Image (cartoon, rainbow, N blue to C red; front, side, top):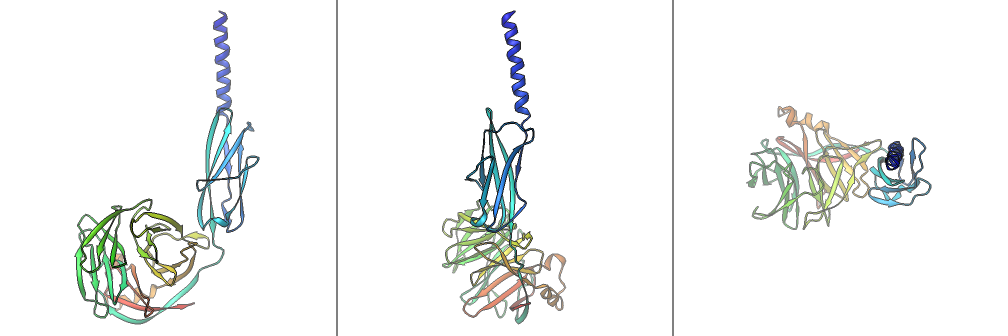
Amino acid sequence: MKNYSILITLSILLLLITACSETYKFTLETPKTVAINEIATFKVSERNNQPIDSVQFFVNGKQIPATNLMATYNTSGLGFGRHFVVALSFYPGKTTKSRGSFEIFPTEKATIYGYKIINTYPHDSTAYTQGLEYYNGFLYETTGRRGQSSLRKVEITTGKVLQKIALANKYFGEGMTIINDKIHWLTWQNKKGFTYDLETFKQEKTFKYGESKEGWGLTHNETELIKSDGSHKIWFLDPETHKEKRSIQVYTKGRALDNLNELEFIDGKIYANKYLNSAIIIINPETGVAEGIVNLKGLTKEMQKTQKLKPEDEVLNGIAYDTKNKRLFVTGKNWKKLFEIALVKK
């Protein structure tokens, strides 16, 4: 009987302890937005005023100093975009993880540009343009859609296709770029890209994507490949291993800019087509800030003077730049014209 009473008492105590532990409900307070270089404050509280032993805070996976269930963090080391906060709360015998986030927005609006047409050249209207690049006097172009994806060398003044290979039917071709006489070509949803010899168009390598979701646009700076994946992120890759080294988030004042597509690196800035919009976003490659927006809606109207476009073909896509002669070329999916344009600041 005595042992039985002890067991009852222990069971009651265990139930009480369990009940008490189950009443712990944590709240992680984070600011919704923070201006760059300002201090962000994070705080954990327990809604039933239960005792908390300590809390550890992490921003983007890196632990930051904390005191009295709070942490302050200077955002000067962060880029624009969404950043993630995790709080580990320690209390009698247990640990609970809470998650939150905050965004850092630019405070200045992007500069708006229009354009003027300098020259107009023929372009193959069967080319569903995905990637476009100027290299040593020629345009190199990749086209998309399964069963229609191709890599081409094109004569600018005539639009004549001088060299062409097809991609296997299971792949949907996307953006491309050229470094050291090697062509790097993305596929859309296969998480795979290819490397080709510039002269022969012979495939030499395949490579896989890392964290980036899909393959959309591709360009390069002096040391890195630069890749878009259809989101508001831009990825920087090692050109030899194709490993993703880092990323930036592209923001204008008040919002993220997603659907970033075909890319070109021009005078230290990333130029990106915004899919389903007749616009080019000019992006700071260090911060992700959209410093400029180029309105090219008039080019679709210009196209329609001589070509009746289907809705799916009205998409501006394709940016190429002749660095030596400062010539900027743009086209669209199945457009029969290639435009040389100059930007005009509004």
